[in-house]
Image (tube, rainbow, N blue to C red; front, side, top):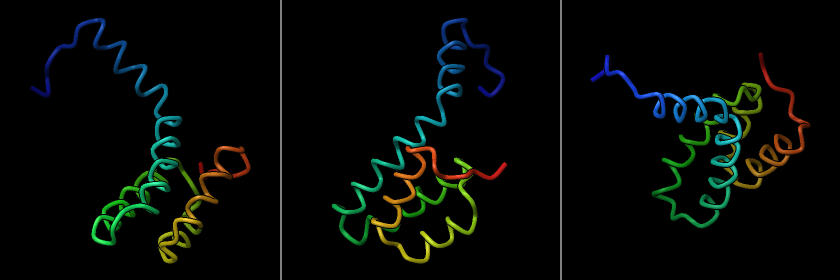
Length: 93
């Protein structure tokens, strides 16, 4: 299935997904903040892993990611999301 040919329509859908991946990741990270506030402690561990993965993919500075992951505080993560959405956050190349 890895060598499967995609139709022209499927190729366009896939291309649009990757063209908008940065915005999708920003939205998912913002939703994770809300979910972290509401989730029971058992489910929070998986959400923190997802948050770390998203921040890494979004090229947030590693020191900032480390700070967020050490604190495991949704308010700190919310501050990162706010800075990303406002364009204040300098991203790693």
